[in-house]
Image (cartoon, rainbow, N blue to C red; front, side, top):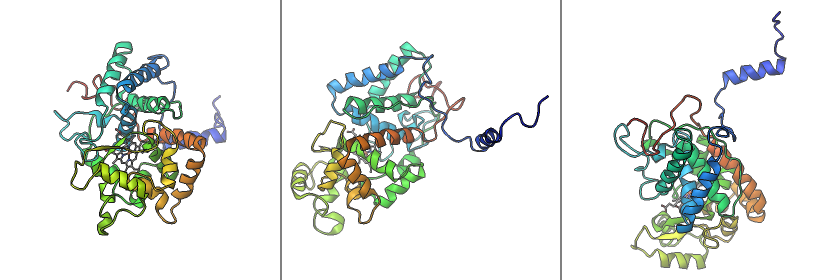
Length: 331
Ligand code: HEM
């Protein structure tokens, strides 16, 4: 006879809570183990290949995952081209236009996967896997990427304009954009450590170089030797799209030098240096820890990448598995 005690009390509480709060991501590391067992090596080989001709591409790929996840969750909405039902693409949003890159590599990875396992691996998961490969191939940590995301059917340009942090913002504003997607202060500091590789155009930090906030002087939290180099590379009224390394010490290596740079006022973006130079901020001790202990940074970074990758994924029967990452199926 079925008694009312079929489940123990803790199990019953778990089931009730799961029913009431089903929002937790249902991703897992073995999602493709039977349907596309080589997915990780296919992605990693493609990233490795791309790095041989473009030392910046790893940085560009992890940034795509970040800009995807902060807008409508990690659903590959950033990859959709404008056209048809996509009237305002995220690619054309202010933080992305003429800035994010790596779409061609994502398309190459997708083609290889469509040959090996047609219709199986989502574009959103490709971005998560490519981000991990980019970091580990550049000297950083490895982690088990959680998988099972599906691809969205829409883009949200207005969301990209409002939700992605700007390099001119206060630390308080940037923090609130992270907390809006469930990421805390440790996530903010750890993930900012991705600026240990890649480039930035002059236009995103030149406000610091000559007349910071109308003072007539450079940002006082810029190391004077570093300032002179930056002023030379980004002269007043010069070309705003000139590139600079985000990490002047080891530009293409994933290490904790981003944090040691902050300690000597060599953060490139205003929002980088603010993590260490904002008086009384709880971010300061985290920066110190990561600067002094690369293993602590690597462990925190891997965990924060998992946290970021868990932002509102589509799972189960939601969305679709796109055949072409640039287009919604059938469009
Ligand atoms: C905290 C707030 C952040 C702000 C304000 C910010 C801003 C920027 C800006 C302005 C650039 C230069 C873009 C260009 O020159 O076109 C950039 C580059 C980059 N960002 Fe961030 N970012 C932030 C957080 C992150 C996070 C969380 C990640 C990844 C986990 C990330 C990864 C990168 C990488 C790797 C690059 C170099 C990309 C390349 O060389 O193509 N950023 N970021």
